[in-house]
Image (cartoon, rainbow, N blue to C red; front, side, top):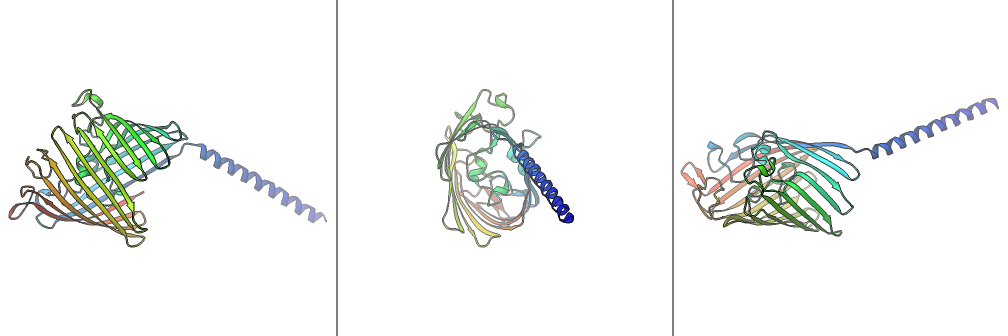
Length: 351
């Protein structure tokens, strides 16, 4: 009898200790949830690229941004620190490498891709102040978030980022509205003390179920007026179609174009996608590679990309063909030409 009593006593003590420990751990978990968590993420990438229709001399490449070196080249590395509270938070996205240098514009030694704070004023309203990537266009700066490794002309000619204040409004379950007041394009660090003192730009975005109509206006200070549509549709469980179209005018010069992005998932680890793009400059815009100020140039570009995923690593082989409206745009062994074909293979690791 005494043995049984002692055994029961020990069991009770063990039960109470377990209960106290569980209560302590539960309370600690609740306390941890109340803390503002700091999270770190980012990506790194590199690639090899060669021209098929001409030599690699002079690093000749399509007139769109990034992936424009020949041979082995570095792309982009970034570290994103996100601090999220119940109603407020901040994001610091620091970027390194040639792609980061081009995206920032080369006017500062510190490559700040994004740097902003936000306030969830209510469940339907969020205010954001700082530097944030553009809302215009289908593609983004980081290759980890794009299907194609090289970028489109539409993305390259539009703004990459903005500095200013934006307000996001959830109008309903499907509709959302964004309004913004910002520095003009490329005035990313100097405020209004840069090349255009006192100039600001206005932005707006209306979204409905994954389809977005975007507007930008800066009074002809940099880009003038731009309207842009970006969207996509899941046509089946394995087939997706992305769309992008834009028109921009700055006192008679500018661009317009459209791109389609059909993408097919053949397995859990492999996808294949095509970007078909028509892009045209109006006036003496002169930014298509090798144009030399020729007016009203246009180009058609077809980019076929494979995407193979191994854990956090993505390998992307890519074949691209650019065909311009004038022979002065590209060159080969026989002189100038309107066509350029190239191949690259890229490796992107996200963490």
